[in-house]
Length: 155
Image 1 (cartoon, rainbow, N blue to C red):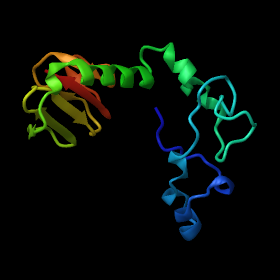
Image 2 (cartoon, one colour; image 1 turned 45 degrees about the horizontal axis):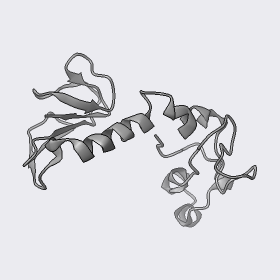
Image 3 (cartoon, one colour; image 1 turned 135 degrees about the horizontal axis):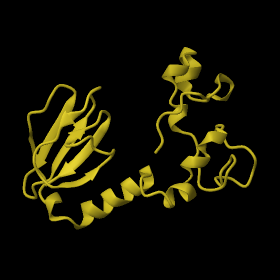
Image 4 (cartoon, rainbow, N blue to C red; image 1 turned 90 degrees about the horizontal axis):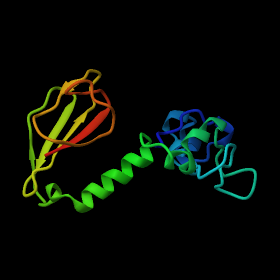
């Protein structure tokens, strides 16, 4: 839902790392911006005031919790589905992991005891998924391929 916001103006940066180095890329402030809750303009219901400790861009209107509640493809919906599966599906049993072989830029493991297979594609190209029933993906599949920068849970 929220990646590091890299467009914060330097005047707004407060992180001691930035103040010590003067290098905006070393600041953690982009990860500390307020959560947009509702509405169509900053501060998106986070505060009754007009300003928050770090600025919130107007284009975050589509990222508010209120907006994402109605979107089945939103990050909020993905996380809610993941939490529900994790709490109710037998595939999550067990505490040990077994690593699978995977293409470069990918990670895959199986959870011993329950059988869940988790695949993460950090490469720049789609990768084939192992066989199994797909429980959840973080992005639409391209046939049976997992697109770049996405993950899948299978059993």
